[in-house]
Image (cartoon, rainbow, N blue to C red; front, side, top):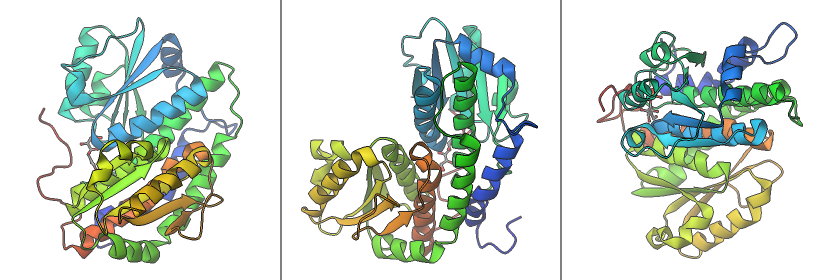
Length: 357
Ligand code: F6R
């Protein structure tokens, strides 16, 4: 039930610190180490390449998950949109393992790929929020998100839960391969949960920023480099689906290859700056759009922030920034929808689970 909350979406955004702590606890053993069923770890270790298959927000989580797995566990990962994979299948490696990411576990596009994969005899793991869902039953292995029911059509806490489970998976596989991880993931995820709380307490400021940048605009762009680019894609999807503002996410460096032509006087450009190695370049991209009239809303991480930034997120491990930088994106969209009198929890033309191909 949504209790005192005006919308499920806001309630679910606010639940993220709690979900994060629940995931850390659930995936810990008595010694406090993160663990995952050894069958699953063996299956990943037996694979020469992982294929992540997902749609929408879950696809965006997959893009970040690829970074976690490749950087930490050193297994090559490809990420594919379910609806394309069916008929546009890439050349597969010799020993593929498929990972289906789906909040509902019912997405028909993803299921179609799973049926196909099982016919070909390949192993499959489903990461889902719904135990007993179709994708869970039909895959060989399941990892649960433990996010609690997600009612709002716009996915929020499932995304951050997906990222948490993916990074835990990456860490457990890495350890099983004797790879060194130079941080303590349990501790870092605890810091993430605390940072999430700080962000959930910043609603007033984010509402103000949303009003300033998004209450009347026709369109909006999200830019970022590296993992910030993927969070921008998610930010744009959130904004589109509930506020009906035409929004697109771009890699900062790609703007000048075409999209910059769309920048007009006052076009909001939401720029994410959480990665030190690309901070200078990203800020260069912001200058390029500002020179063409854009209205820049820079969201940076503490330590990389500058005076002109609109919002600063707390500092967390650089690899884990998507778990928290997405929260201002979710809240910006929520308030944009509210200010524009949109039905936040039930946006037009959308259903919570998409059970047709
Ligand atoms: C966006 C959203 C959708 C879903 C997509 C996949 O907020 O909710 O893009 O992420 O339909 O759904 P699942 O994860 O249930 O397979």
